[in-house]
Image (cartoon, rainbow, N blue to C red; front, side, top):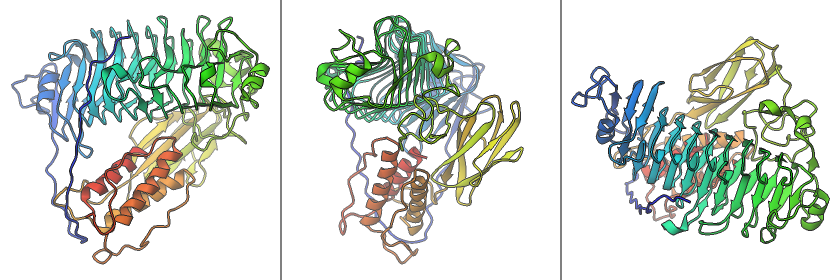
Length: 613
């Protein structure tokens, strides 16, 4: 297996600021810069709207924290960036439709777009193809976002990372990697989020996560969230749809895997620093190709894993739903799955029935056997939505941590959750609307029917054009739609052909955003806004409202104390836990009577609020 040659860089942050509780506003920060790149531009130009640069590398060499680079349609060589943004002011490269990177970057000529030690960078909207190694590569950094890119036909990987913590990889397409994987997260990079990607027809793994102990670090990837991905046609050369070597304490939910030629989801150890233990695999639909391996593969002493609410089918003549090596059985929890009558407890060497599996392991007492023709709308046409008569309907275990399906349809739609990646709703009739975020607002529809928060669902006839309008409450702003609409426009237009669901996210507007270290005093208003934001986040998840210390904070009177920051952190930790995500890694806890509360601590809480909106 090819490994990423990277070394973890150390990071140290020392933030000191004097606290004053007052109403004095901060000085206005200077405007952040926007640059433009155009095939007809010149690198000797100013990089402005009317005088754009010619090359992406010219922009990468010029950017600083807070800069936005807009790339106009055309064909380009890639770029290498080694400058970091910040949590408040990331660096962002946004590609217009029609931007194609088909020549390697001039600095690391094996890759298209290369982030080397560059943290807090957003790469969005690029098509990257034909690279000698990786389409997009991210190493020795943190908090990088890879969003809405197409990585097709690259030699080794669509996307590759190494020692890259807190990655967000979402809404990308990774296909036709000729030698290895579509998305490859490696080298002890912790807390990656890999969601809503289309990963298909890659030679080896669809998504590969490998701790690579030989490359340094602890060799373990922890706290990953892999959800809502569609993964198919991968693995002619072996591997898995989702492959996990040295992955621990991670979640895999609402993924659709079909037609993969190797394993479905594998939890094991070869190059990882330890076994893949204590992971949660829930609400996935896995249908293996006729030349595929087991739908779920757990081996090498990978103990403590949970497998619930999955559909696990295999068109191969011998292999079936779950294979577990004998040393991986301890701590296994598996139940409420739709399965075949095929299991193994000796790493797939022999096959046993569901009854024998139950007797040998004590697992899957509520699981049931069914075939694709009875489960899905059109498995031959790759439509794995549930039929009205599907035995997976209302047959699962309702999990508070999984409150919507791969399409954004709220769970449960019936009395209990359906099994698999999809929740059933009446085709062509229902449109359901959800709301989330750190603030509130309303969603209304035209034609009338939805007025949410009151009526958050309505029935429409097929072919009806429905317009949803999101209106934030005072002190809030509309952030984005998810589900049937994926955009930041408060108006969402839907034509009712099948069951549809949309979720509107509202974000809290914070005073003095951002707070400036050394300039902005910490004020009571800052705490009150964060309390309201966190209470709202908790409300959407059914968590209790917090009994805050000093519930009334009077500007100019109430002293901001360590307990106030500690409570904010604790209350927000519960939100992450409810979402099945590991709580944030916070800076040093403030100490009562000793620690001066800083603007940096307020900004840290705000950043983590934004992460779960």
